[in-house]
Length: 258
Image (cartoon, rainbow, N blue to C red; front, side, top):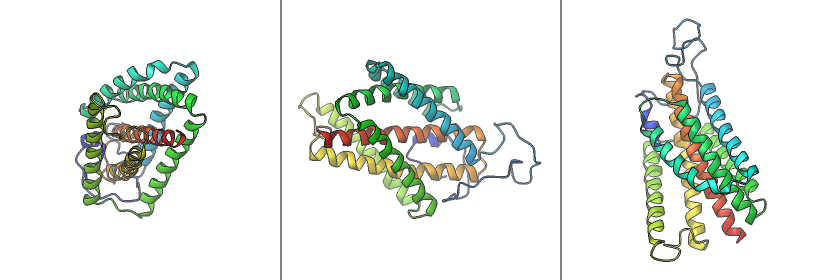
């Protein structure tokens, strides 16, 4: 299996075969040649329904937590929620056992974070959250179409390019953050100027291409008959990318509003 931009997918069992633009599934009976019975989740091979269902549940928890935070006006919870979410993401990524409760806890905490941040941005720029949500959905849907139609093929070269770019932008974010302690605005990557706009566009582009790698990881897992419980990992990885994409679009829109 090729590496994905989401480190969590390294914990998927080793698999062979190449998945591409299909999201195929095995028959309801389970592995090829198996009796037509419903196997336990730890033995039954993953299907596209598992991925869609688990991703839907994870995003549902995130949206519910975000809406509750926004409605109650508890924006002050955004920062602690971000820190807790970061820790949970690390635990989930490096934990060797699939843990749906941890993944749902991460979704809830991230929902609180996004709800608080979205409320703050929307109070300053009315309607910006709806625009960011629409933009995020459009990018996700567009990349899914690109993957399904084979317009862009997920090759080892593309995978290395995306992962390298991802490491690069994260490194620049850290340098900008550290520089901000000594120089106002740091490197200017988040100051709202032309450089900040370009940087956000680059981040959005990398996040969009990361979806291709995530779709390919899910496709290969389904083709290889990976146990159904690992669909939670796929859901977690897609959620991480969606959260990053939404934040970057929200930030970019705020630059134009200013």
